[in-house]
Structure formats: structure tokens, C-alpha cells
Length: 260
Figure 1 (cartoon, one colour):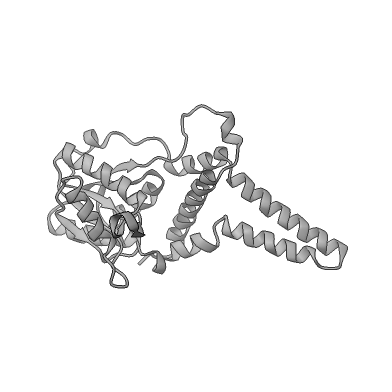
Figure 2: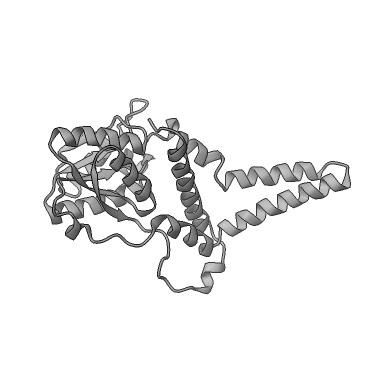
């Protein structure tokens, strides 16, 4: 998905915390500088509430709870549920630009997790693979091209279908469905992150495909025991909270507007 052109990522970058909470805190501090005591108190309260929200999102306990709501229970093993499937579809999850150790652009961490699991399923099920990622931009290699290179060279799995025209998850679904229907495939094993599976599955089903979910990269803590460390704020928890809230915002957008 092309982040520079996606409304989802624009909303995620500005409206979804932590940026929105930082902006709200700055607004509160600006209001607090007003000379009127009541107005200043209101501004201070706004700033305090924003900072408290930022602190809460930095707690692993809160981050895990948000992510678990999106991920839901673990899906059944796709190796037993995919008997009638005709293909494995692996969705792109972002790229790493200017990776020095690789001599340039390469797949991002989320994409690599999906490729690894997709390769595992392809070998276990013996199904052909379709990959779909963001289109090339600024004369740089596209996400799907990088995915294909990693899948074939590093995991030893051939790619039968290849799409790099879509810019959103809904676009990925439409382009993939067109390629697969032409090959007579109606049922697919869909590989993406667990937090993203709900939105992705809905998009692919609306595109006319039957979906066997194959989620990977669980980030919540469903079923795990509580630990005192879950009450200690940290940057990684804030990152998980951000990913969860951005996905929630994306799901809302998918309900409100027709994704292109």
C-alpha cells in the first residue's frame, strides 16, 4: 500500500494518537497561558488529560488490550481448513527505504513476517502464490517486486501471480480477485497480520473470493498471564497502541467511504 497516497495512513499519522494527543497537549498549554484564570485552568486540564492519555497508551496492559480486540481468537490451522483453496495470497505490509545493509530498498518487517508465513504455507499445502503490494513510486522498485524477490530467492517459493497496481487493501483485493478468477480460483488462503485480517478478509470477500484466514504476527496478549511489567510504560507499547488505533480508524473509514 502506498502510504503517501493513502487516506488511511494520513489519518493514522495526524488524527490517531500519539500525534493528536501531543497536539492537544500543546493546545492546552497555549490556552493555559491566557490571562483569565478560568480559561487557563481549562487549558491546563486539557493538557493534563492529553498527557495522561499518552501515558496510558504507553502501558503494555493497554496496548495488549487494544490489539487483542482487533486480533480476536487464533484462527484454525489453515493447513486443515484450506482443502478446497486454489491459491495463497500474501499482502504487502510496508517497505524499508534505504536499507544500508541491503544496498537500498527492501521489504519491511511486517511484510517479511507475512512472506515467511506465506512461504511456510505454500510448501505445506503445495498451492500457487499470489503477492500484492504497493505500486512503484519515484523510480524505485515496487513493494510487490521486492516481495517476489525475497520469496523466490530467500524462501525458495515461486510466485505465479503478481500485482503492484493497488494502493489500498481494498484495491489489493480487487486486483487479486481479477487475476484469480481468470485462473478459475475462487477460494484462497489469505496471509496478513492478525490485526489486519478482519479488514482484509472483508475486502476480499466483497471482491467475490472465499477466504481461509491465515493470520500471522500476533501482537496482543490473549491468554497470557498478567505481569507487573505490563504496568510499566515503554515506547514499544506505545507503538503497538498506535498500530491498533490506526487499524481501528482504517476499519471505520472502510465503513464510511468506498475505498479505491
